[in-house]
Length: 436
Image 1 (spheres, rainbow, N blue to C red):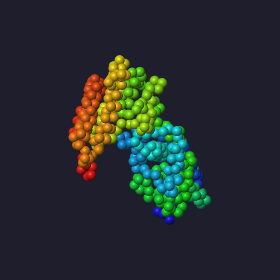
Image 2 (spheres, rainbow, N blue to C red):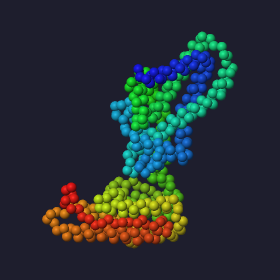
Image 3 (tube, one colour):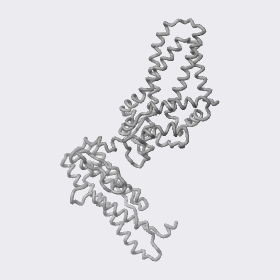
Image 4 (cartoon, rainbow, N blue to C red):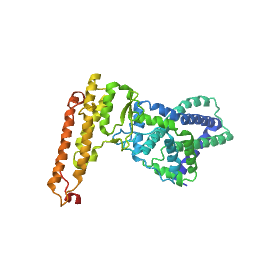
């Protein structure tokens, strides 16, 4: 017998003894009040929890704005950072993870792929809501139970104080039942976060329930069964949770209506500067985003050129583009339609020497330079010839960067000055360096 068996049996006996003092009628009244509070908490918890997510502070605490490294802290991010799928033969896999994952897999709402583990992110969002629902359930139970205390006190005042032996015996039995329900209620709440074994102490308690306990492991099975059948949110609720987190980056166009005409066009063209290809487009006067597939559309990442030393310069350009897009999206420019058109001509004007074309040229030149730069000088090669080619590539990149910088000069007044850039020195990989 485990210590948790002893603890939970002690609860049953203690509440049963309280039933002896109360007698049958008062014990039955307490049991009825418990059942009312428990049922209201059980069936209203997820409804109340989802309603509370409409409050920004609550939503930020539970779901946040994602689970990636730059996202704010939230229950979802906390779960994402520590969660590991349990062994597929374990109790937690079959009873905690799989039922939740089945709901997520059958949902039609997808999480945008932005360098995160999408499956784990979905589980973290869903799990955070389940945990929050359990907390709401406990809160509802406490509030309802406190209100019912007033009612039960009034009713008990009409019940005689004299108790027969039979009344006390029945009171013990009813009290024991109420104690057993307290045990079950605790286990049910615990089942909502028992899988998060990275939290100190959780794994040891779950092991007591599931492995070492003699009787309470049955309570554990019943609690998980009820949780999975009647408590877990359905796939539609999960879809709404995902939209709450990723509504600004998903393809549902939820924010597109606030931009229109030349303002929207400039936002689209500036946003596309961060990609090889054009994931952003205008569909029926609304923005549309096509997830990059690394073939026709690929996200531009500065770390691709880290070995050449140009990564900091490239990142500065990408960050500046993102800041322009964010300011347009936040409607913080105060520009007229004609001014938006002027800026858009600089970014992607047809038949012009525009920023979009120069960004493409820069990326192609960088990839060529990355190849040339990484090739060591062979002993039988003429270093002057190879280094001359490398120098030409370097100067071409330098010229493109300075050209892009000059094109951004008209943007300074509205969008802030282009960042200070420091070009790396021209270097050459040697045979000795590669051997190291």
